[in-house]
Length: 335
Image (cartoon, rainbow, N blue to C red):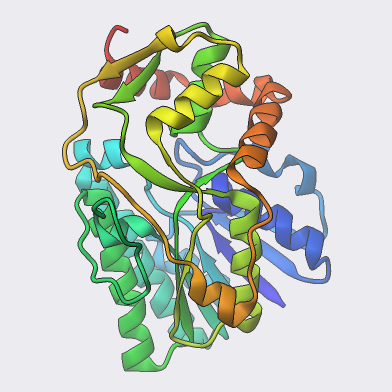
């Protein structure tokens, strides 16, 4: 089996490559990544010399390179590559349209032309919009994205669906809740707060801090994706959630406690535009049809995640580049 993993140098993509090479050592994995700010080959250092792993630096919008890769014979595409940070999408939405929509179409066309066996579109629960205090997103929930990021992902999802309906391309769409774990770029909540604690800096929290997310450990997500690859029914959508809803404030308070920082370190900052209040995933479909069960409770997963970053401070510091530092400074101001 030959897998093409797009965005494999990013957070979830690199964890997925580790997972697949560990559990399926007879597979070949090709990692296609353009190494933008969130892509980091240090994430793949443990596997970089494996004979069944290959890295290709290229943009998914580069049709010629993509076509050459597919011409070599690709069985499965697992498509992670995307601009994914909501705050950045508010500042530069055009980049999100180009990568997330146009790039996805380029990959789909190559997959169609070269007869791949399955195309997995790794999407997000954010395409569903915002929930009230009750209820959960199901695979039948209408798409109602509220940010340029989520709108671009919803558009890509619809393009994937169209290639299945029009051309018969075998596809699955997965929509996950908020991931956390090793190798996550530190503009995201959990690694960002860990980095703040290590520098004895304040914890900036949007608005009142009561925005709710369903937290999913990245290894549980990788296990679910493996099941979709091997057992997923063509054309189906699968929601993947950790059933671990927590407010942003709860998450930050837990990190502060684990790292011996006082609650007074929390600073409430102006909320971002279009900030969805709550996401909650109903993952009963993938549980009932594919037998998936998450192994990490939020408490267990957060403990493991904090420990990983404390044991990889060099990695954490190396990813907080000058470019990222400027973004953080502009976004949070002087705290």
